[in-house]
Length: 385
Ligand code: TRH
Image (cartoon, rainbow, N blue to C red; front, side):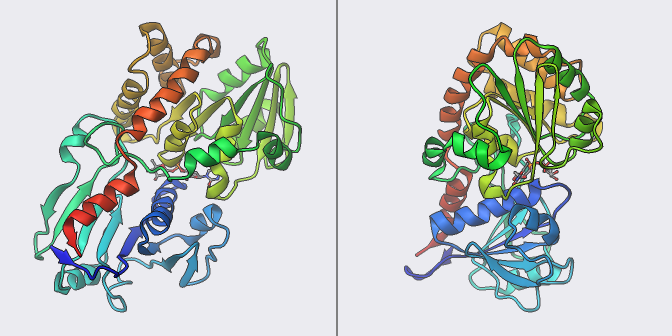
């Protein structure tokens, strides 16, 4: 067991390799901020792609090798050699999503006395097996080091998901009227409208859905942050692009393109809408804390390995609903993920059930504790003061 002086601040190094999109650094950045702000840790974040990071935090300068933002030391991680030479090894080392630590760094971890607590933070999955593997130690084949596998999850016995202590209070204080003026440039739509936010990958189902909103009886206001689905939205409306500031109308559908906002303000989009289409990992989690109905575009994997994960999430989320609502959710989520054709009317007929469930589910999910808190508790059990 590692021993620290009672007043000594815990040092933590987080290593993040950006595979693609925003989720890898999105999760690591959120975790880094929370460990610092809520647990008082001194956090250093190694990231190999600062350009992607800059989109989430405009204060990050992609040209700098070393800098600080929001109290976090940020190192531009130039794999694979960088890091071992210059560094004092931290008390806690987190490798995110099985990114490989520099060999020199691992060798220095092995030399360190006391040994650091080494954690591999895995991707989120709602599947049952996750609880069995959460926090399992695995000895390093060459060095006298143990690595523990920390599994985020949606059920008991897992690491949970990230949630800041002040998140609910911020959501309750949210001024929707001011948000609409600031971000969309119009007054907040009245209750006769359905407001939809759409954050998704390229998706063959989007044309059918846009057509259903256009042809429906209820006016739909669609908010589309600039990104991978924007091209399809532009083609639907027959406009050259769907960059921030673009507005288009067809039938009952009115769509607004939004700029990509810094991560600390992303939740506001979810709070402003009646239903959120989200994707990947981090936005999927935020949609659950928003306590609004949502639809998940899961990150697609080879051999449809993502589909059991989609069904596992559905099983948690719809667990207490009656069978007709459960089946409607499964039909729609599957169609949004390439299996079938989406039927908005069929799905939205259950709106009130989704709304009630969204609130209850967020409470259930909070019951397993937040990821940063669970991680800090694990580390506290390994470090004596
Ligand atoms: O961007 P994602 O698809 O990310 C990932 C990665 O592809 C990763 O490799 C994969 O393994 C993982 O998904 C499952 O989706 P995600 O996780 O939702 O991350 C998006 C982040 O972008 C999230 O932190 C919210 C943030 N965001 C903003 O900060 N501002 C914005 O305007 C928008 C639309 C998103």
